Length: 141
Image (cartoon, rainbow, N blue to C red):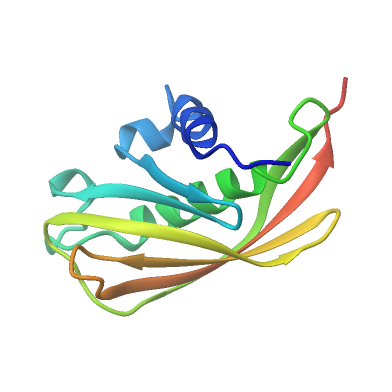
């Protein structure tokens, strides 16, 4: 089976319409057979009161890219993905610019996907590192 990067990005960006991802201006920008990348602007809309990137916005970015990445590996007609656990370590603060989240698969089982999501800034400084566990469920029809 061949990998179609443009098709994956189109599907992921279309799923963002009318969701939290659209509100946070998350955009999927790169994909490969085992990774997915999204970017999010850092400005006052995602700041905490001290003017820094809010950890919750960072986690929302991580869960968004990790969950979308799992969609690349399922039968979308008959299966769906749910995040069941996420952890985050915030290592560096960010006031403005953009952050980039790259999800890479750690484990791909039939029902459990485990992702590492690295969030970096424009200079590739590590801002946060997250781990996301997704469960693959049959769609109830």
